Image (cartoon, rainbow, N blue to C red; front, side, top):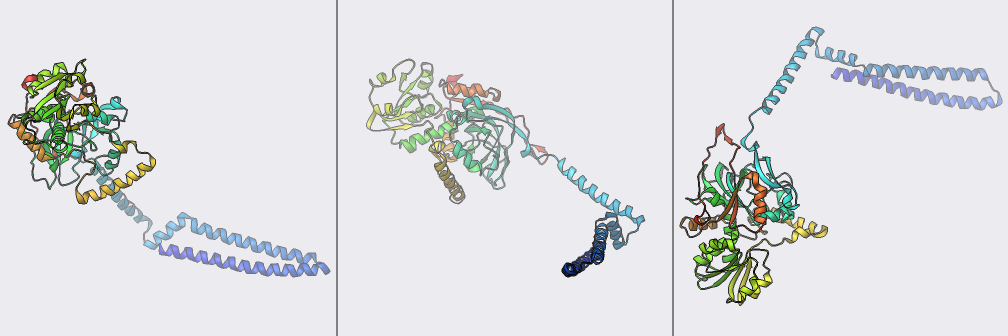
Length: 500
């Protein structure tokens, strides 16, 4: 190759020399022509002018021929190829050997690439069923997809859970209409399991079995039965598989089914936060208090009724006529039927309350204050509006910058400043102890299959539910670990006696 370059440089130098000499010769001819033109003005000579013009034409033809020859020599592939073979010392008989070696190398590269592409896909590359919303147009955007990617363990403190049952909450209905969309969009940028804004997996709590562990998980083992809840800004639990951090899950209470267990985590934590954090109640301060639970047969209301009764309060609740047996079984001392009746007139006839829990959007905060003691407390457990969902361009840009700062610092401080309800595995253990001792009874209204997810969502949106609505997953996707199938455990549970 160096020899070819050397010959090419020689040709270029020759071309440069010819061009330079041609320029000098042309300058000399132009000077002569200018002098002759001045002489011709006095003594014109047509013969001399013709001779000079003929010499210039011959010189131009010579330069053009030389340029054409050099360009052809350099751009001729055959000549370059011949010079390259001569430089490598290869004759025409050895060309086949070189071609064979090149073919062998290319074939090996292609074969290895095809082999790698045909290797068995990993477990986390599988697809799963999930209940999602594809837009923020309400329940019309609800869908069951069967090709959602299974989430992967990205951090060493995470676990992969095979979901056995997950509940549907009222906040999921709000999410279908865009609740928390701005916060979710920003936080999804830091979640490697989320590639784009839609679809959004719904569901806030579930129960299931641990099938894969991160290397730093030391509180759980494969096969453990767990339950947990997730906040509204992360992918939900209405899917066959969910990834969760070990400090967000707890072991499922013994003696209850997966369906029963899935009904309690989210509602239980909301109810516990409403009583202990917002109302400031505990087992000592609740004694003798008059407590009103509006819509006491909602998922959160069922827990509030039981905790208030367990801690020694006098409990009054409002509910529909068909829910009165459930309210009585949960410990309500006084029941106000809300079917086609004026609740305000009925409440005016009873003594005012120390604490009022409002678990529905139907009753206004102002109305609750009307029936509260002067030093009483009103606590609302329904999802409150999020200001970031209504930000314009300017506030939206400022919020985006603030989110980037917070998300960068969150890895250092380990806190979530947008948390409204504290989701704690210690609290799950506390609720689990109450369930195992029979002091707290989860209430399940109906159990649906994933194919009937739309019916389940419309059921809870109707406001006629008594307790929690649950979706049971019969997982069809089988995960593999090192070529071995992960075992699956199936347990049967029972509904509360008064709902059988």
